Image 1 (tube, rainbow, N blue to C red):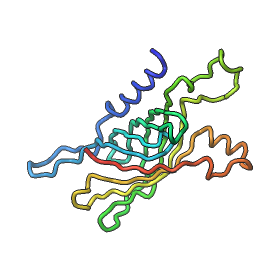
Image 2 (cartoon, one colour; image 1 turned 45 degrees about the vertical axis):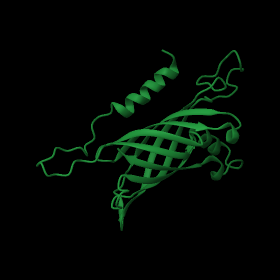
Image 3 (cartoon, rainbow, N blue to C red; image 1 turned 90 degrees about the vertical axis):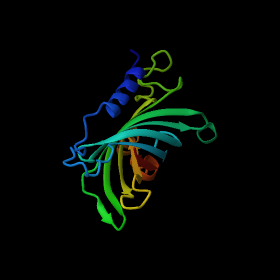
Image 4 (cartoon, rainbow, N blue to C red; image 1 turned 180 degrees about the horizontal axis):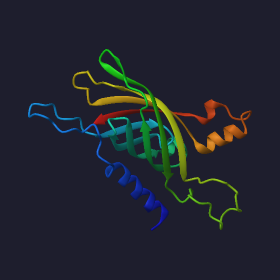
Length: 202
């Protein structure tokens, strides 16, 4: 099986065939409120996986962990070429949300993301027939990133309680290594990107 197909299969299995969330507890009586669905949809602007991206995911371990599968698109008018990227993201919430009037604010969310860019111009392993050995030194298609951000859940807002808005600052491992090696030539503003997104529970 080609590496890209193995990668896509792993993404789908991670999001869909994940262990059941601990937030789903058995109801003790027939009048109990049904537990919230662990599944959700997301729409995201920027963040290293396209100008716009859409995703599906689920929460685990009493909503302390989220796994997401994204598909992003960067149009030619913005990126100079049409670029399609898939990504899997795992986000951990280490502290309890802060209740502020009608919303819950998650002030700290940390995550890891692995993305793959499709196209003949990108490669997971450097092709020896096109470039000298170690010409690039890293994959141009497969990227790992670290993420840091927060989220606002509209928990007690009528008609919007299924929705949440989130923000993330992220950087790829390549950028981070380059910054550590050459801090004089790269500033934090050049290696970090900002993503803004919306989540809707199913």
